[in-house]
Length: 333
Image (cartoon, rainbow, N blue to C red; front, side, top):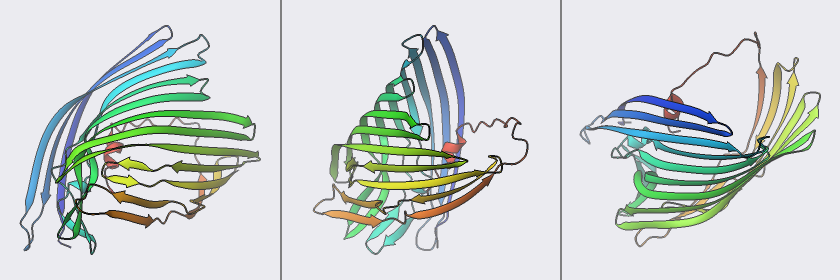
């Protein structure tokens, strides 16, 4: 009840962008300059004095994109891109206040968290927008992950810049119309991750491979009726200090368009098989074996009615969030 954390952050940015087309080639170059200033203040109480922190940093973020239409009909397109990006901590993760999760575990934020920077390269080939193959590589510096430390038999969970990570992935995407009333979208990714960092009294060195598969079935029955059935599975994977066991999920939905297609009613059911679980092992704890098992409240049925009214032919007002939507996502649920 004594937790009162005041946080302010100012982000200023300037952008330059250049595009050029040469025959079958398209190019785009970009450069963004960002400056960030932040101030946090955890108000004190009779048990603990007030604490505060400030930080200022500036960075450049280049981007490059090029595409090549390999034939005159553009059936085959090759795309390469590079970008440097920043991911800032969740606001709550900067709050140093210690809160109990259960009688064995306490959670605290980390005001010393730094933003995460990554270099991302992607090479993809697309055939008629039906089949796409993509090779991705990313190098992440000061990656933010959950850390767990044991002191006097108590677990302390807090975020930390604990990993320099590398991720290499190969993915395949298929969009196929098998019948006029039935189409599928299939997605498969095979991924290698590696992490390396100093972690309290231990050295964190972890790596591993995993795969993700997703299959979406779309049905169009006519007379305004449609449905979809979506399933996905993620195999066991390493994520910094954690070994997370695989899980899958099956979702379905049915929809009916009404009022000359200006309205619709939709029923969706998520996690039909109730298979979304959290199960894993915590590594790099000295003289300790630790794991966890969680069952999520993931099965739900939702009925939605949507109705668009007014002048549908009027052009929608353009809105440029200038990146503010990404910052809004830093409010941790």
